Length: 162
Image (cartoon, rainbow, N blue to C red; front, side, top):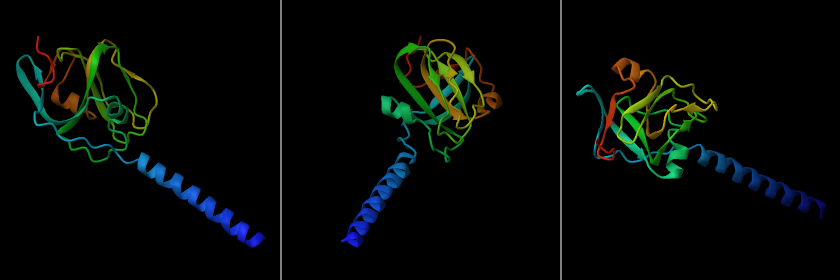
């Protein structure tokens, strides 16, 4: 009957809507990686400026998700992106509600650029300006507060020493 068909169509539409609503909710769940056993230090002229607990994004899918949708990043934690090679990098803040500093570093951990106080949810590319093998994301303005600058060094067991 017509009424049965209408109920069936309504049920199918409701099921499809529920599927998409669930998919969107799952897609917006932030990625949380385990905290690495080794801390990362930022060093300037032999002096440690700060030490952080870190999550390491080494796989492509981890790097693609990064800190998107995260609102609960502790002030003493950051995410270290480890790439296979050194080249100019571009990040953006799409789906990232927390303003960040992005610290780009070369193969030996030497900082080549600090992109300070990035704009949440922006799709504007944020370049490393020079070749980088690592990117380290921390809360916005921490770099300035700590005195981090180009030429300082990220030190961690994954980062090759000169």
